[in-house]
Image (cartoon, rainbow, N blue to C red; front, side):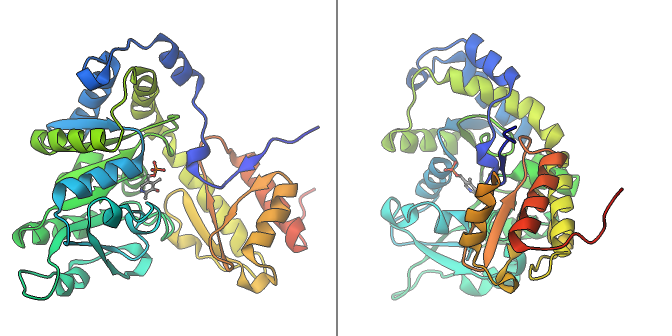
Length: 353
Ligand SMILES: *Cc1c(COP(=O)(O)O)cnc(C)c1O
């Protein structure tokens, strides 16, 4: 029998559920550039309602959402403050410079979680020499820092202080629903102080395509123009938004299972000789493991796991990332651990009869 692939590369690999496919099939559509797609309009209204904001905008990708926000908030030549591992800096093709003409001011923070004390000294005001700060950007959960979450007091304080300094704050909330589940706090509570928020429908929420920007009516109207500049004005996009609506309503309640599975993997991996991971830091659905003690580089481990139909990516030669989601169940996680045991030649500690 051909065992199913256990795909831990990302939560972007989730496939639409039967309910999503049904909704897509039945979606009422119109031309969204004319604002006439009823399903897109409904998704935007629901997103605005859930986030307790004036307005929302459906965008084809999280990258387009973030980069549209940066474009609206900044002017060319300004600096964008972000954490060193920020998605906007590392995984968005240099667009903050290529498109908005901005310069990243990256700050390293433990677990990817910035504090106002780290940001304050980096703020640049009017000067005859230096570029001025235009925006403060946070990421919750922080993807490349292992799915870590911002305690609400920290992100609230950063927003308050940024505003006092006359700066807008944008949240890359690609996985804000994961943060909400991990913290036991509502999405609007975690995000209300930000001027704009982007969240992804296509990650752990499982929609096939799409992200959403939320903010004030004015901000969203401006972002809408930028989306069009980027070629993101879609026509009968209701077929996509329909899946997004199902994702938004149904999927958040299942995210705790992904978090439990990530913890299960982390606890299992912590027992492997040569692998370093701190399970107490795995609080959402992303885990990073240091494989430098195994004698193999991550990319080689990746290749050997793939032979056993377990997929996980090397990020650097020393580190691998695993991401849990609803297409990998507990049995899949067990199979991933077993495959890694075989790849690394680890003897199983406990044998159950
Ligand atoms: C996935 C992701 C995005 C958006 O990515 P797209 O592939 O463009 O949808 C943005 N920020 C973070 C932190 C992400 O993980």
